[in-house]
Amino acid sequence: MTEAPVFDLSESALTSARRAADRGLCPECFGRVFGRLGHGLTNPERAQRLTDALRLPPIVDSVDCPVCGGLFARLPTWVDRTVRAAHGFEWHRFTCGSRWDPERLAREEALWIEVGTEWGESARSAFNRELGKKVALASGAEGVTERPDVVFLADLPVGRVELTVLPVYVRGRYRKLDRTLPQTRWPCRRCRGRGCTFCGGTGKTYATSVEEVIAAPFLRTTGAEGSRFHGMGREDIDARMLGDGRPFVLELLRPRVRSIDLAALAGALGPDAAGRVELQDVVPAGPADVLRVKEAAPEKTYRVGVIGAVPVAKVNEALHLAVGRAIAQRTPTRVAHRRSDRVRTRRIVAPRLVGTDAGRFTLDLRAEAGTYIKEWVEGDGGRTDPSLSSLVGAPLKVESLDVLEIHDTEV
Image: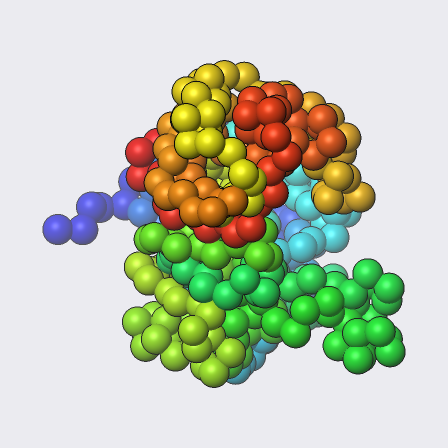
C-alpha cells in the first residue's frame, strides 16, 4: 500500500510561500523552496498545494524563471540528449549529474534567505533526480548511485551531455607455459613505444605478452577502446607460471558491449595462446578486485633448476640454515634501471631439495612475497646476503625457474 503524502502547511511555511509567490518562479522552483518539507510529493505538486492554500492562481512553466531559466521546462530535451549521448553503447545501470552556472546556484540560495525558507532543495539535486527518472523511463535502464555502467553529466551552460563509460572488469587465473613471453606489453626502450627500425615499427620489445594474448578476444567482443592488466605480482619472462596459475584482473576501457560469455571467451584466446597461455576461473569482477589483487602479498612456491657441483649433504645443510633466516636483498642489478635502489628483507619459508644430477640440482622453495629467487641462489655479486651460493661456499647459477603455486587462498 502506497504511503500517503505528508506536507504540513505551517504558518511559517505559508509566510515564506507568500514572499516567494511574486518572484516569477516556475512550478518546479517554487515547490523546491519547500523541497525538504514533508515527503511523497513532487515539487510542482508542492507548488499547487501552496497556491491552493494561499488562494493564488496556479503557477505555470516559464522560460524566464529567475532560478532555473526554464531548464526544468526543457527536461524532455535533456532526456533526449542524454539517451543519444550513449548511442552505440550497452548500458543497464546509470547515474545522472549536472554542471550549473555558479551564479544561478548562488541566486537560488539568495532567494531562500530572502523568503525565509529552511526547507530549500538545491536545483542541481532536483534536476539530477528528475532527469534520472525520465531517462529510466525512456531507456528502460536503472538509475543507481553505485556501480553504474555509464555516468551522464548534463553541462547546462554549454548545452550538451558528457558520457563516461565505466570499465568492465574480469578476473581469473592464468598459466604461462612459455619462457619467452613477458606478462605485460613491453615498450621498445629505444623509441618508448612510438615505433622505430629497432623494433620493426611495433613499438614493442617482444611481439606479444600474456596481457595482450588474454585481452585480445575480450577487446574484440566488447569493442573496448583499450585494457589494463592487473596481476598479483609477476614472473620473470624466462619463468613459467604453473600450478593453479596467477590471479589477475582485466579492466576493459570504454566497452560498447557489456553482456559477454566469459567461459566462451576464456576458451578462445586465439593462436598466439596455443601452448603458451591458459586461463581458468574467469568470472565477473569489479574495481575492488583490482585493489585486492594489487595489494595482495601471498607467499609463493618455486621450482628452481640450479647449476653447481655441490655435494647433496652440503646443499641440505645450507637449506637448513636458510629456513626463516632474514635475507637482505638490495635491488638486483638486472632491475636497478627501473626500480629504486634499496634493501628489502625477505625470508625463505620452506626449502627442499627434490632432485640431483651431475653438476646440477633442483629445489622447491616456498618464499615470502617479493623475494628475488635468482639473486638468493646466485648472490648477485653480494647484493643478496646471505645467498645459497655463500651458504654452500660455491658459485651457483639458476638454469630454470618456475612458479609452482601462489598461496593467495591462505591469506
